[in-house]
Image 1 (cartoon, rainbow, N blue to C red):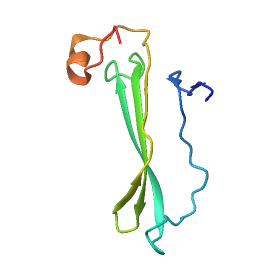
Image 2: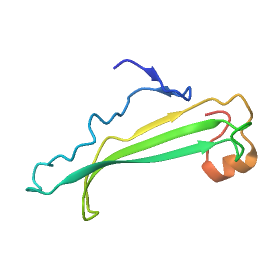
Image 3: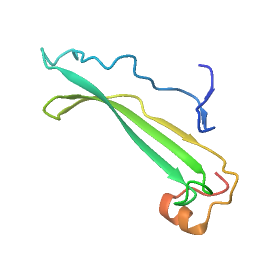
Image 4: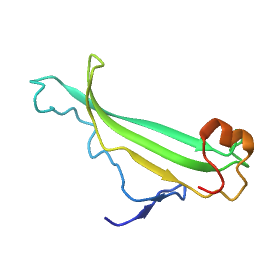
Length: 101
């Protein structure tokens, strides 16, 4: 697999993409109409977008039925980014992410 850089500059070993917004059928769930969702978690060095940086990006794709039931969970994606500003002790306490990681 070819490593990629996402638009935010995070080094990624795998990638997720959604090829269609059309409903599709999941094997084993009959004719249930389903949708694809993506849970996204972003950790930053602080709360100010003009000065703080993204330090972690995590995503998990999933398929759900129209009644809200989770049907499948895909392969998770996680990437760390070395920020250009120091990670404060408060952010380390909150996220568990250290400058050394």
